[in-house]
Length: 208
Length: 108
Image 1 (cartoon, helix red, strand yellow):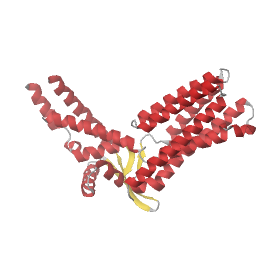
Image 2 (tube, each protein chain N blue to C red):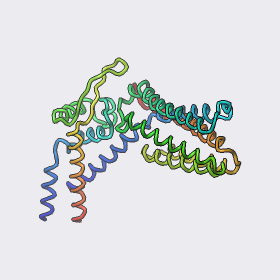
Image 3 (tube, rainbow over the protein chains, first blue to last red):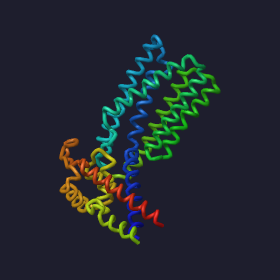
Image 4 (cartoon, chains in turn green, purple):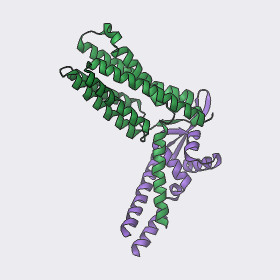
């Protein structure tokens, strides 16, 4: 009897832990912040209309990495500022345990150096195969995000987008740059739309 | 029979301060964040203001929770976080509890 109660209490603790973890994503601000990030990166650095900005391959990759790093840092800052303005007065303030600027910076540098190296090495491959591989890689990144966010269905949809775009790109035979632009642009729009919908629901649900 | 007695003894030995459901909920929430304010704890724990306040005071007295007062957007805000001792007490409690459950299941 007593052990049954204890078991229930342990289950409740696990449920509450998941609820706390999931709560960070339930106001849509994370998606709005990162949707904006994707759109800025996509439009400024990958858009076919911005080709006149392109220099040598190496300097371009370096420039992209530096700017993307600055924007990712900016996105975390933006998410925090947006939460401060529109979430904390409604749902209360909480700081994530893993929201440590040093960790974020190190993680961002590692991820984008890896991406940079990956994209650079792709240049020697056929653009169809490289876009498809990149789609797969992004799929796994989003699946990790889906698990980390407490498995909300919308994050599963986000993870399917790179695969779908890569598939379309494969059949159309577009270049890596075009495929990447399309992928980032569609992701940005989806993130932003989803974030706005989630935020609207959150706003209706919680009062100041 | 002997094992049953030992399990009951272990249950009694669980730290009562942490074992109380409301305080366990507060510690669980705080263990998942770096820090949180009263409103956040109120929303996630489902406790009433009075209850939450009383339990937070007990946890602070025990040295498990740290309280910081500051301003956000020019508004006073009280922020709570787990101390090292609080985190240890919480993880030890969960470990002991899981151990008891495992032993009980094995016995069945």
